[in-house]
Length: 129
Image (cartoon, rainbow, N blue to C red; front, top):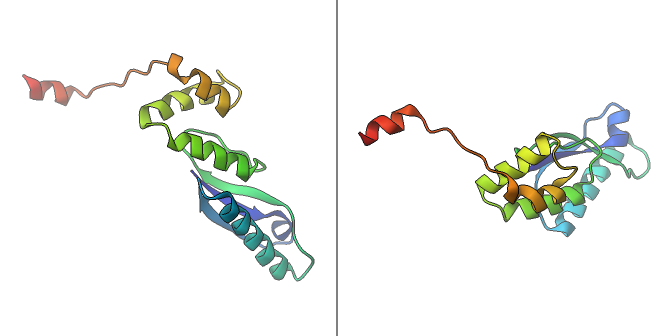
């Protein structure tokens, strides 16, 4: 999971100050990265300390992310997702993207109830014969 953390006040003042951050990351490092982005934003705007961020963009195959989602919560989700294999992540994603659960935690509780059948290419069968 990657999120682009952006300074909201700088953005509202015409400055796009942000950076893509790969999650999971140590919580102290995440806080430090956010503080750095806000500090650069405050310097660019030549005003007081900035406090608010938003997520301007993201890359994640298993979860839809909103612009005001909490990056620390997303970091926890990324840690949990790292413990899953690719097939388990597909099951979690299926539950989330189809509205069958309300959040990632519910998807973790129910993903084992999902069965995903993956198609096998015809060429793989012809090689067997």
